Image (cartoon, rainbow, N blue to C red):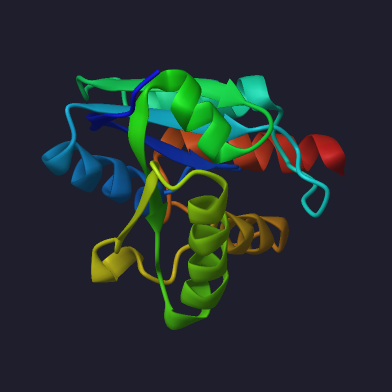
Length: 166
């Protein structure tokens, strides 16, 4: 399938979705006709708090008012998934300089694997530049208020999940 440059994939673990993720999705919609949020299954280095199904549901709620957005899960290489979906690009969010080195490495590797799929870096609004799902989970685990970092239903889901764990 020939890549379509009006379609883009935004991959990630989204464990959980944050205001930073939502901001990147809105920014991507400015440039692309169709944004597919691709929720990755568990990777070897991450132990997700939420199941893939739960992460998809939270993302669907977060994007409910946005047209042209779909949320799906995927396994394997992002570039293979992008080709399968007919997307010509992959969106990656860059928050801080510390993200750039890893993301740059991944982008070059993806280019070597599939030079027809572009990687496009988007920066979130500066008020979200420090946000990460990991940070939110750490703050919540220490009984901190995470309501400024994610929608209320995400905050509720995180707190409920952490209470159940322990």
